Each structure stands twice: as structure tokens, then as C-alpha cells.
Figure 1 (tube, rainbow, N blue to C red):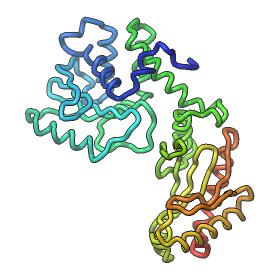
Figure 2 (cartoon, rainbow, N blue to C red):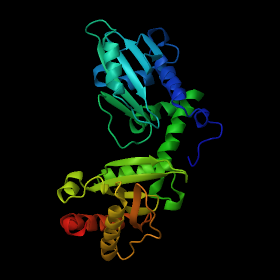
Figure 3 (tube, helix red, strand yellow):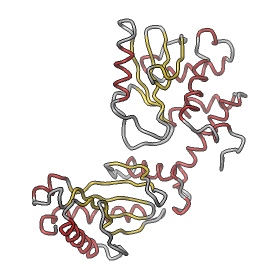
Figure 4 (cartoon, rainbow, N blue to C red):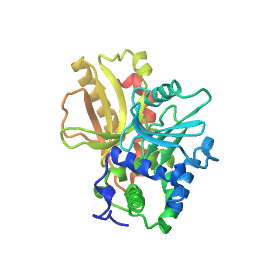
Length: 325
């Protein structure tokens, strides 16, 4: 499937509220009173629930509610409550999952099992805390693909096709030139760097800016403690890191309020990396809080070699940084 059909409902209904509605609709087939309405969808809904180990033997649920205590989808059954937090393109915040758990635990009969799950159809950098199970796109497609082959339900089929489209876009970094990578392709690429190549990020994701934003993959290589040990306080330099952004691998720094010292550190860093990487460059030096020291470029064919090059130079820099900055 090269593109999502213009007639696909979920090409338009892309909000988390729309997805919450789909989750609720699917699980409604597992309500005791609905088990016989559409046996295929009931089987799918129960398989969805059985993925959660503690619910692997349930035969039905009793109720589904949306936005109860601000919970996206709250499913109640015999002896359990299932909290489904839908984070399609966002992350949880302020201990959301733990707070929801505690709120519901204070309202249900003693002995009721509170189960917290995350529903996440695109890749993310961080693992959420306090979650008993995660419904990733991989998990969902593993459940739904076989039912898609048998289903004639337009809502269900559109949703599975929507997930398949995201999957194809996410894997497209493997065959498309980098100039054609979408946000999904970059997410797939970043997961590949971490899982397959062992490149450890401090964070990756989308960065918004007035120029339109970009996808980035950040790697810390000098710790705050190391900088403090040689008298480089946060007034001079807050952090030093690598960042993969678009087609560039950049050395970045977050400067402190002592601007002159920050400029001097940046120049020393540039000179060092330029000496080690002949194509390391930076066209202009503007002062700000987050600054690019310099960068090398990469493409869809040479990214492994280029990333390894700058990581090697960065590792060597660690042994010398006391003399350089």
C-alpha cells in the first residue's frame, strides 16, 4: 500500500479522541450484551484484552467509559479496571499513569485489580513509567491483520489500513533517499540506530522551531560532572552533545550566560573536530543558547560509516577534553 486511501476515515480522524472512539468501539464487542452481534470483532476484542497477562482468561467486560477521571478509556470487568492511556503523538506527563491508578484505586472495591496500559501507535524514545503493558503498532498489527483478511467492517478495515500505512512510512527509510523521508521514516531510522546499531540516545523526537521544525536524535558525550571537574561551570557551558538532524550529524552545545567564554569554548571545539574530520564545517557562528559547533553530512547509504566516524572522534575527545576546553 503506497498511500492511504483518500476514502479512509482515519486519514481525517487523526486526533487522540478519534482513536479513543475506535478503541471503545472495538472493545464494545467484548461487552457481555454484545458478544454475539459480530463474533469476529468479539474475537478480536478479546484477543486485544488477552494480550495483558492478568486479563488473559477473561470472557467479557462490563462497561466502557471515556474521560472518567480524565482517563482516556476506562474498562471495567469482574474484579478489574483497565486504564487505557492513549498517547498517539505525545508523552505522558506529571506522573499521569500513577495518578490515574491512585484515583481509581480509591474508588473501587477492595481487591479490584487496577491495570494500566499505554496505547501508542508511533515510536517514541522514552519508556513510560508505571505501565503494565504497551499496545504498540507492532502489537496491534499482530492482533488485527488476520481479522482484516476476514472482516467486511469498514471502520475496522480502515483502521488497520491506517496502521499499515504508518508502518510502511516508518520502514520507508530503508529504501527511500533521505530527501524523501517523512517524520515517520525518521522515527523508524532512529529506532534502527538504537536497536540495531547500538547508538544510545539521550533523547530523540521532533523539535519545533520557527523554520518548520525537524526530527533529531541526541547523544550526550560529556557529562555535567566532567565539565565541572575542570571548572567549566553552567555559566560557561551547560551541555555538550551530538545531534543527528535531517541529513547532518552536528556537535552542539548549550551555552551559559558568560558569552565570551562560551564563544572561546565553541571555537576550540570547532578547531578540534575540524582537525579530526576534514569535512567538518560550519558556515556562520551566531551566538545563542543552543549552538551548532559544526557538522558532517550523511545520507541513506553512508550513515553507518559517518555516525561511527563522529562517534569515534567524540570518544577520543573524552580522553582529551581537559586539555581542549
